[in-house]
Amino acid sequence: MSARLELIPLENFPEVVPGADLAALIAASLEASALTLQDGDVLVLAQKIVSKAEGRYRRLAEVQPGPRALELARAADKDPRLVELILSESREVLRVRAGVIIVEHRCGYVHANAGIDRSNIRNDPDDPQVLLLPEDCDASAAALREALAERCGTAPQIIINDSAGRAWRVGTVGIALGTAGLDPLFNQIGGQDRFGNRLEVTEPAVADELASAASLVMGQAAEGLPVVLVRGARLRSSNRDARALLRPREQDMFR
Image (cartoon, rainbow, N blue to C red; front, side, top):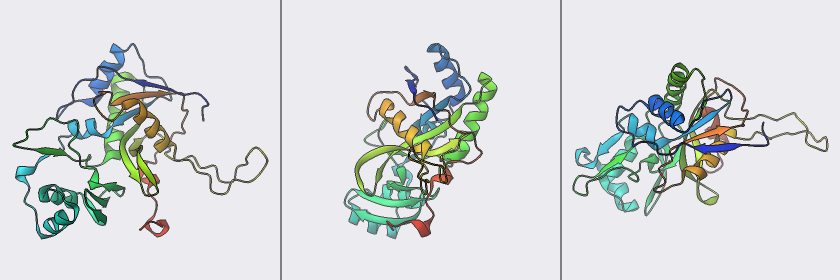
């Protein structure tokens, strides 16, 4: 692991539309910034541009809410059509209160409103639309890594991040929804600390830590910086993906 990191946002990144070639856009943005991918580089992408490229928009006018959505909409004070989409993207509803529905997303992570969002997308007040998470963030990360390797000659490690709340803390942080080419966990169990004590539970979620660091650079409003190049992390290569970060249900003390 490195003691020094560089986090370099790719500035003037274009608006992403359905069907966009993210590898081509990233390669062009790197060139415009006089940057060349190096071995060990990590690219962190905001989930939103991946969803946009994959066309994960849904018009609320095309959604017909069912009885369960109507019931939850009353409890959460939400548009029943939005709630229907939340249910369609979820395995289980975990908590409901006014303004939020906490679910287990069909990909396994616990997320507010199944990660469905309407910020930073074009919207017509008379025909509102929302943006869903990618179908499979790990698959999206792997495909992008392969495409960048072909285009740039170097396969960067990939993290797709999103903002999420935590059960025991106020505020949101960036987390890794999808990864490719890196081990999202750094298992130090069995090692020693500075005083020779054996480490028994130390396993930093390095993918989440980098996702959060990049999120700080990206911003959450009108910054327009959805891709961040992280240099110096020296993460271990691995075929494991972000699913390794999901806590097994039997170990989950918050459900």
